[in-house]
Amino acid sequence: MPTLQDVAERAGVSLSAASRALSRDQKPVAAEKRERVLAAARALGYSANPLAQGLSTRQTGLVSIIVNHIGDLSDLDLFDILIGRLQDVGKQASIVRLGSVKSARDFLRGSISYHVDAALIFSDFIGPRQARDFFRTNHVIMLNGRQDSQSLSVQPDDAPGIQQAVENAARHQVETATLITGRESSELEKQRIAFYRTALARYGILVSTQLHGDYSYASGVTAARQIDPRHYTDAIFCTSDAMAMGVLDVLRDREDGIIPGRMRLYGFDNLSLTDLHSYPISSIGFDKRDYVEQVVSLLVDPAQARKGPRHLGVPTRFYGRQTG
Image (cartoon, rainbow, N blue to C red; front, side, top):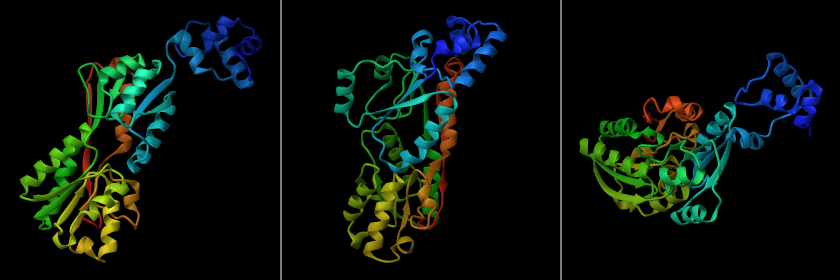
């Protein structure tokens, strides 16, 4: 592999001049020298090592993404967009999995601190202060609903979409509902449940049953099997599309035509899979590209971001499909 010394020799400049010309911080170097160095780097196929650059610039080019796990179907829709945009702005993602309180404690206790340009916190189990201490940066963007006065944050505004979905149910004479919820450790989930209960009460819809899952298809199947087929409610609201898919498959096995003939089913996340014929689930979602752009806007210019609103919201809306 070509080295910085090879680039300097080909361009006819000193090693320090070549380093300044290729620096991401636009260090002073004559324009003519910079062009020779860039041309030499292109000709040789030289690519600067971001970790090596970080020793002098204190910028690694790395962004840590802290997750519970990457298994939810909603993760696949979102993270492909997010990682692509990070690469577009010259960053590389480093993904850390913290799926429980214990794993978070063990990780924070047993690992060396990481030096990164920023940390994006999705995991339920780490707060902003822990993130700042561990990743040696004040540039922490909280995406899990746990923020403080020093952190930046982005989160979906669930209220509009939930209001629209419940309004849709009320228009179709829904009077009773089952609510199937996700991880109890999630601050965002707690807010989401509160929005559901407020909206359902506003329209006089009784929540006769609340069951718990973990956002997965399997937990939707388990929850649906707990529902007594002799006492179906008028609608089932799930706080993830994956759980709604599990519910739909159980109900399909029990009786053809139960949805939407006898019951309405609502999911959450507006997964790309819900546009397919197999799972035409009415859902609530937000524009994932807009969400990622909000995150990136806080990431690329932290100084400017801190002059504006520290906590950004992305509105949700209702997407009606066959099950609704």
